[in-house]
Image (cartoon, rainbow, N blue to C red; front, side, top):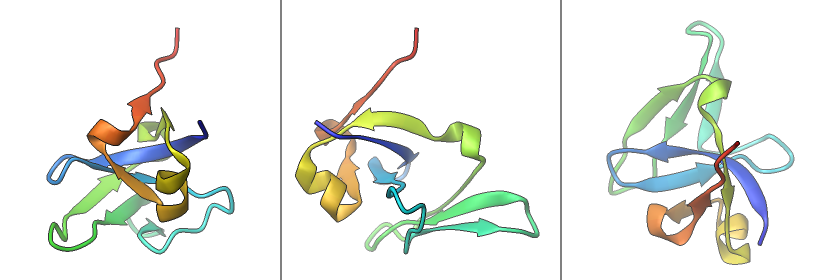
Amino acid sequence: MPIRRGILCERCRRVYFIPPSGKSARIHFDRVQGEFRLHCDPPCNGVVQFHRAALKPYSIANESRERGYADIGQCQVILRR
């Protein structure tokens, strides 16, 4: 299973992943605020502001990797020891 770094939208419980290219249609860097901003897909439409350190590694299915997101029950956070 692939591993991708992602951020959780607490509102809809969906994890959005950073693609290998580092470019995402949903996640952008706000230079003024000095942090990243996730714009969650409808119907949630939530906005999550976060710093790079908030990204966590997740083990995900290939379908989730291609889609760019997964519901929290479809992926597993990888805990560091």
